[in-house]
Length: 267
Image: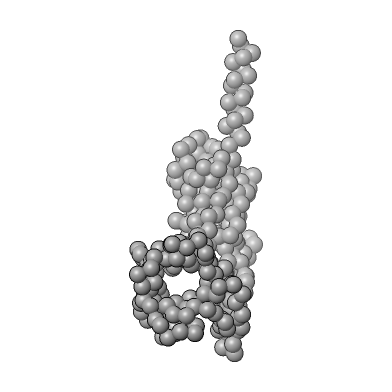
């Protein structure tokens, strides 16, 4: 009986030790819209593809709800200049021809249909649809708040997890643009979890490799304390590598083997 008890205790201890902290990054790259072209119900799917020069690029499809056939779409968007038109191009075979003009603006050269408005009206507001070879113009609108959904595209949610269960929103600690999160140290002291995280974020989110540090990265060390229920007690952070400025390696002291010591500043 004693041997069984010892085995159960050891098994429970091993299970507790096996619990590990990690991270999860959930991108928000798509949206699904429901609306109308004139009186005809449609569904539109939009996906963020990244950047074309300085503009965001989006693709997807739209379809009439009484049809199973989807029509490919492609468009670009930049917040400036505001007076520019906003166009969503549709092409039946999806074989779009594009080019970048002298002002580094991305252009769609061939299309069969287009949804068009001006950025002043607010994207997805007051859209007009017409075919490339027709003067017939039909009003288009979408349910809900497509403008707000559109602005969220390209964002992401960054979490600390324990055994794949979300325990902390790292975005709330200003790391919503992180693309790499590594737990480099973890120790339990007096029922408090002490963690050191190495976090990489782009120097210029959306910089697309252009301009100073457009493709650079900033690296932070994040120190956090969590109680036995994984509730945040304390956090501290330090930028240790930057594309914009040189940081003295001795400015911050931390030890992954002793995360409970946190981050010490030398000056």
